[in-house]
Length: 111
Image 1 (spheres, rainbow, N blue to C red):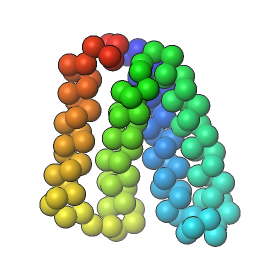
Image 2: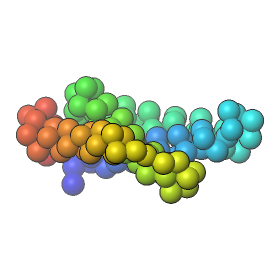
Image 3: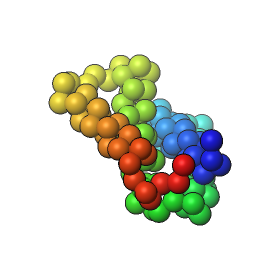
Image 4: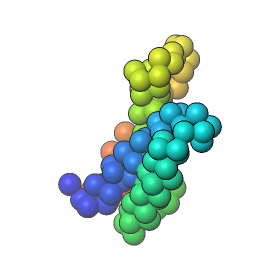
């Protein structure tokens, strides 16, 4: 696997951790989750910057934000007990389909 996809994967993972901590911080009233938010987002943006050496910003951001949305929706359901209705699930499926199209068919991504 190319190194930039590894950077991107860990950028998505860090963003997902940061956003989960944002929910757990209860509007930055809990110190430990609040610190985790800042650290995780910092790491995520650093890894995004490394990814941008190899891929265009629009593609990187589409993949990063799209996967982050899908992962956060799953975590919201599993960890925080938040529910999704059929249109939300359909929208998430469309996001995944868009990422697959970019990955498989775009010349802007290097494989």
